Length: 132
Image (cartoon, rainbow, N blue to C red):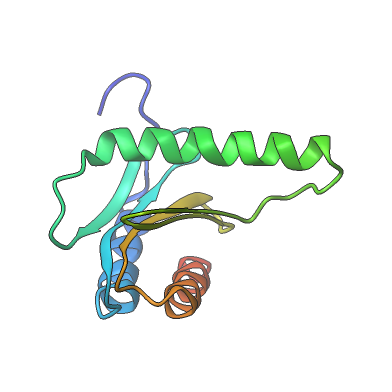
């Protein structure tokens, strides 16, 4: 742990890892699932065929959700819960997880992923994290 990294309780790390493995692991098309702190530090992750740098993805997740919330406030749509964008290679989803230890779920999907299934699994991860 560095001086600027927040103290992440062990039970949050364990619950996050278990939720990702149980709920996101079986979903086809997910290359990376990552839980991070709002200020950009990795809590737990799950990789499937990906070389992405998770520390950079964690930092971007926090920044992008903060920007999405700012845009929402500007247009009187406060409380951004999810940010989704599509590319030629797939979809990326960032979702706020409101729990005792707030975090952001980031999922990088390939073109085989079924977005509705992924969003359902993301909601289930949020519910699971609320139990910790």
